[in-house]
Image (tube, rainbow, N blue to C red; front, side, top):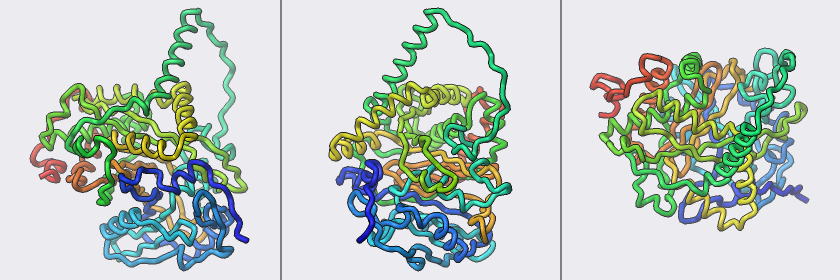
Length: 478
């Protein structure tokens, strides 16, 4: 008799059409390209999966309704591991986005690894394609950590995540600091703190309910298509944005006294504004213009050293962040972006958002699907930001090759920007409908220019001029 396990409520939702039928959305998959100068040994990869992952029901079971059902005791290697020869890196990108849009067979566990071979001097890639029910990005990072070879042998200890998110065995030991006496505030200060916390809690609880429609701009769908629920067109193109050095990001952070996430979101906001300017879209200058991004927030979870696959959960929240695209200077955009992102650092705000998410999880499926479709359709972008190791990684750890870069390939009903940090660089990708963002390569160039400018104090207090005719972004926008 096949072994069965009940899926979590979130996993079951992801596995069973989480969107209204009229949106015609694809199944949710987590897809990513691991780039190498030489393909890792396929046999070594198979053995690593058998050793570290196959015992987990999410990897060895089929999805049937709201249950995990183990139909096979032995891994079907020929099905789960496939080698494909392609002519160049562009063909790899096209293969990856086609795979992201294609669901896997229901009679097998919902994951596959494609070894994409290309002739030199092109980089080759391993394409991972896993149903989102298996886990979110953080869960997959933790579960796959035994396959990551780094100096010292503890890959998660090199991942730049807050200590509260990292498992105990990966946290850096901090020197004990002497206790400093806490200052006592007056009753007025206490009242302000209480009222501020209540205000943040209410805002977190209501943020998704009160989101309005984004303004019509040069890089989103017309309002007529978004009035109720945006339909997925089925057309998506993957664009790898230029790699950005984390040393550059560090300069930008020091320049503006903010976090990496603040800089990433400010750089994206600047690229959106300049893209609209180059498209002669003056609506971007309206101070009341609305342009928002959904952001995904992964939550802490158990990850025992003896079995990191326990971390495979979909333990995440979604929030809405307004992008200050009407601000003309980079300094003002960063300032407004910091204020917007501060909500996500507020414990009270996150408690409100968590409560809202839990309450909606108990609502009827039809209501949840309808609400999700309407909320997603009100946003221009979805942004994810996931860290990987900050040092070079060999993949798989035994018999593998050194990872050169990572590209996340995830399509959504709106345009999605996925950012991943690895070994001193940011790797960002844009997956968008080519009819909506028609000059995706130019958008990538603008992203790079904005990130570089944020690190230069001389370029942050004046409004950015439109690109000259001889600039890289201007040439791409012709």
